[in-house]
Image (cartoon, rainbow, N blue to C red; front, top):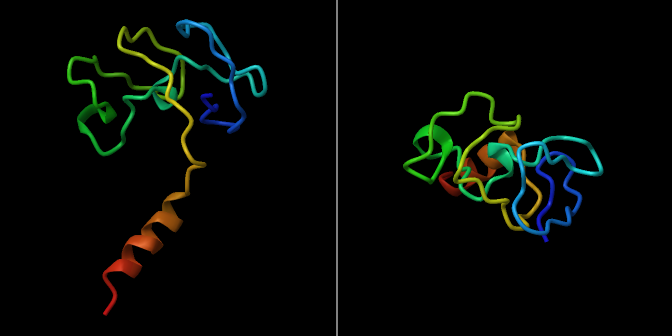
Length: 92
């Protein structure tokens, strides 16, 4: 079951997520880039779907036709923790 990117609570989704759908726990938009399975900050346009149009506000609802709610992901690490782990890999 997918989890909300913002509050990390499970979200029951049946069918497509529509533009105005919101997380029942925190009220944040579900049809937002950060909630999408194609969202990836490492890619051009922060999206793995090459045909997707540029979206400026990735945490707000949008009208992207390629949107698919992301499957459950492990709780995200903050940037500092990720950087620390990366640096630890390359220490002598």
